[in-house]
Image (cartoon, rainbow, N blue to C red):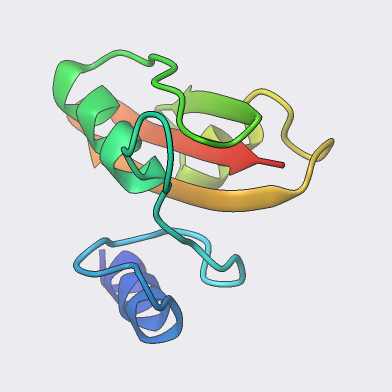
Length: 107
């Protein structure tokens, strides 16, 4: 929990448009979607965590991957479609009642 809080604070300090979002990958610059479905990756992952199921919600980016893991945030990210194959534009991981939900937007 302390690690996630520290990571969220680092993201908030480094992401211009992150607002109150607790993002997982501090090395990735995270921005809010500006066209189509205006949900950010964080908002999409949050909805998945609240509903307890993964779903593609789209956005203005060409590709979106969603993932889940009961083990760790890293595993949820690695389970996303296109992980390691495309350039990440926006990413987030949110803890749900049954595990971690991730959403990644790619170019």
